[in-house]
Each structure stands twice: as C-alpha cells, then as structure tokens.
Amino acid sequence: MAVGLAATHAAKRALVIAPQWIGDAVMTEPLLRRLQARGERLTIGALPWVAPVYRAMPQVAEVIEFPFAHGGLQLRERRRLAQQVDGQFDVAYICPNSLKSALLPFLAGIPERVGYLGEARVGLLTHRLKNPSKGKRPPMVAFYCALSGEADVNADRPQLHIDPAAADAVLQVLGLQRGGYVVMAPGAEFGPAKRWPTRHFAELARQLSLPVVLLGSAKEADLCAEIEQGCQTPGLSSTPPPPILNLAGKTSLAQALAVISATRSMVSNDSGLMHVAAGFGVRQVAVFGSSSPLHTPPLNAAAHVVWLKNDPSYQPPLDCAPCFERVCPLGHTRCLNDIRAARVLAFL
Image (cartoon, rainbow, N blue to C red):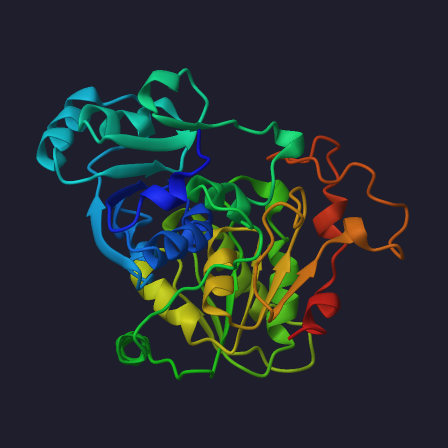
C-alpha cells in the first residue's frame, strides 16, 4: 500500500519512530533526507540513548525522547504520550518492526501510519509494506528508505553533521586536537563473534604514531582496559606505547559523536559507532566477523572493510561465514582471530 505515498505527503507533519540501535538510527538518515526534501516537517521519537544521533541530522526539526525502557508494552506510558501528541501529526513512519513501536501512532490517532508488516500489527498500520525474509532483506538503508514510498532507494548514504565549534569545545575539554588522534571502538553489543580481539587492537595501537582514543559504553570498559593494558605490555614492540585516552563509559553519546567527527581515522567492529564514523565521512577501517558487509556496510567512500570471507587468499575458506551468531558456534572465531594488526594498519 506504499505505492503513491510520496506524492501525497508534501508539507505534512511527520512523526518518525526511530530504531533502538545507534547503527540503525544512522541508517535511517537517507529516509529522513528524502522526506524533508519533499516538504515534510520531521519530528523524531527516539529512546534517549539514540536521540543524540538525530540531533546530528540537520533535516530533523524536533526530537522527542521517549520515556520507555527495554521490554514490555508499557501501555500506560504510551497512552499518556499519545494524548500529548494527539492532533500534532499527519503521518507516522515506524522504522522498527515491533508491535509496541506501532502502538503510539495508533493510540494518537495519526491518520497515516506507514511500516512493515510483522508482530501481528496489521491493524495498527494504514500503509503496510511486506517484510522481506532474512535471506532476501536488502541493505538496511534501502530497507528504511522504502518507507518513503519512493523508487530508487539504494543510492543514498547516511550523512551526519555537528557544528565544528561545538565539536571543538568537546575536544578542548578532553584535551584533544582535531585530526590529531586515532579512535578505536572495540565494542559490539551483539556479541563476541563481532569483536576483533583486544590483543589485536593493542598490537595495532602500538604501531601508530598518533595518540589513541578508546570509545565505548560502560559495558565495554573492560574491553578498553584490556587494550590500554596491552599497549603497556613490554615486548609487543620496540617502540614506546602511544598515549592512550580511555573514554569508555566516560562520555555521553553526543560527546562521542564529536570525538569521532574530528578524528584522523577510526578502527572499529561492525557496530553502531562504525556507522557513526561513516555518517561523518571520516577515514575508517571496519573489521567484520560473524556479520556481513553486504547487509550493513559502512557507507563511506573513505571506509575500508576487512572481512576474511571475501579474501580468496585466506585458506582454508571461511565456509561458515557469515553465521550472524553472537558467539562462534564452532568455537574458533577464525573470522576475527586471523585478522592481524598489520592488515588493518595498511589502510590507516
């Protein structure tokens, strides 16, 4: 029912229900750019931990932080918020596939509610798109752009923007100089089968000539501490260790975005911060393991992907990849363990 949607939405007030993951939030930006270009005023409804991503998108007029937590329908909170926004929107675009994400637009009586079918929410949507199976799902940017109802949804790449003066203010507080450091983001919330070993991050850091900034959430503080400790271990290199600034769990997401926007380059796993770096167009190396860059690549002309699956010289071939598992089901995690620091260093 999405056919013809684009032609009817000019100058409408739109509520976009955002995904709950940072990387997915970045990958909705091309959708928002399309909607804003045809005259829609965009308000984003987002959970607090992804809201800063949308404040780095100039086309967004307003961000509403949802007071929801993980798990449960939380009907009372959704009804209360629905009453507050009743009559304020003409159309809602619902990016997540969950039932609960479609409840607020329905309860608020928003006339047009666009989303993918799934979780028995057919009655909550007025414009329904078929949800492709996992094996046939397009790259996520195209998946979200299809909500616009427009054709040619594969050409866009996400773009983020932070006012340089605001970013420089963050750098000054942290004692950093624009372009004078390398960011490493060793986390991947999905699981260890997406995380390049910390010993390889440490080995790489010791070979760099610039200071290294470690970014991650409080949950990733142990990973970053392992890298910091590994850089100080004697015998790894004949050169002295680089200065390390471990910011894991010590910055807000807004501050982390500022740090990434001004870095010389960045190394990460397939993670939300990987997509943030792509959105800023910074030089980056993305290390892939159990997941696939064919589905969630860093859409950035300055990005280099390291994935042993598509390396014909790597033997024996990784017939098990991509497995999309949280933990290697075979117990060896060759897809990441066998990526040496020198391989990543070649792209920095």
